[in-house]
Amino acid sequence: MAEKSSIMAEKLNTIRAGVLGSNDGILTVVGVLFSVGAATTNQFTILLAGLADLLACALSMASGEYASVSSQSDAQKVVVVAEKKRIKEHPDQVQQDIYQFYYEQGLSVVTANKIAYELMNKAPLATIIKVKYDMTLGHYVSPWSAAFSSLICAALGGILPLAAMYFAPVNWQFLATIGATVIAVALTGFLSAKLGQGLPKRAIIRNIIIGLVTIAIHYGIGKLF
Figure 1: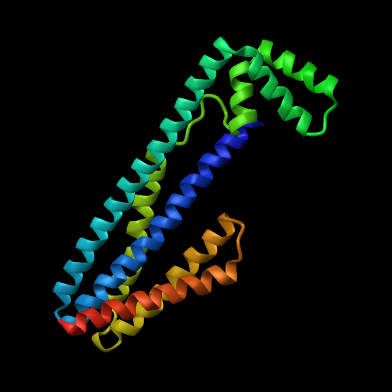
Figure 2 (figure 1 turned 30 degrees about the horizontal axis):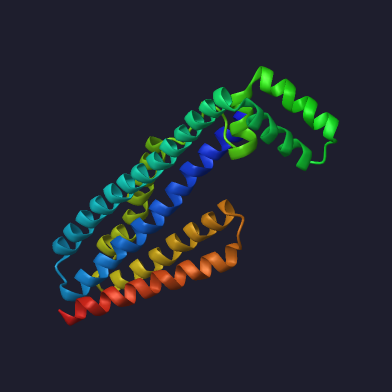
């Protein structure tokens, strides 16, 4: 059961990285498209700027996720080392922590003490990191899966407004890009709300507003220059 919980947490972390990467890919690319598109009508220039930003955003998101999750993984490993040392030097304290955990779950003093004693003799390290940190021994968050998920999703998210801007007729390219952006950020808002057990409607509206504000700001900057 603990292993399944750890695997599920790993999958959720990968999905989280993908959703965030996708949202950033959409907003950064559409921002560049509107700022450049407001300054010039040259389709090649717009495409080149969009592609350059798409690549930069995807790599930036991937490297950021890798660094962040690597730090989290390192922290988990440090915890394991610390608890291993504590088991060796202060086993009575570790057993007391295990006892306290089960006692707070509603078990009697006798039962909690018996479970703590048995677990200290069978699997002390796995038990203490589970009850104290909700971790599974040997299962650490993977920076590579988070980085790869963020890279791919940022690229896919950024492609949507880029394709709308480039392939739509010139007279309709801005409206088409706005439409593609609204649909894309609404989807990421819905997914992030579901993932975080939040309110989908609120998340969708918030993402759409942020997307439209991003477009307005960058379009205004493009018009200034």
